[in-house]
Length: 262
Image (cartoon, rainbow, N blue to C red; front, side, top):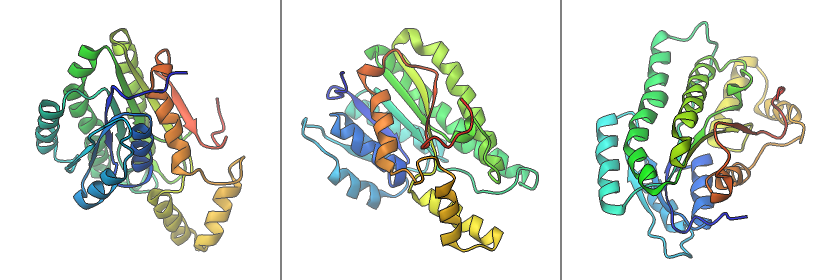
């Protein structure tokens, strides 16, 4: 099975921590030259120095706020001009704040759509020419199992994740003939800062302790534990590889069996 990415360049968004960091490490281990993107230059520089470079890769990073679409475009265009085309894109963005759908401020929906959907469209149109020229593209959207089954108390997140899922499915049909696959990887409960914040919010709103909420969440998963970020990154590394050339347009849960539908 060909998992070698030594001739490929990858852009990993939200790379300063959690799932993005784990994906960057995995792709670099498979031989890809990785460009990290997030807001914190210090965190990105520290991670960049830790990325495997056994294939002679020259990793780099872009410290930019994805909400600032003009600046995002400028730095990505500069990277493409200086470093060359990017063949793999891990589209990873932090989730909206938790809360019920019916009480969410309308602006929260607008902000989430701009942060996720519009910023993704900006990056897509910048990266597509290089992927098409290479005849190789892997677009991997880090979404949520809420694409398949809504999660209580994540009203805004459920909504925008579903929109992203349908965007990706539409793109998969449009781009497949160009050698570009588009897949959604759906993390379940994974040990990340995002999970920590959700546990704290649930504890505060329910009156339970953090320990009680944590234990209940873990018990709700068939494998009886949270995922490690590296386990999620393994799935991303496979879908980014030549071995996954015939897989496109799917939603792949990495959730320990928790999602209650097919």
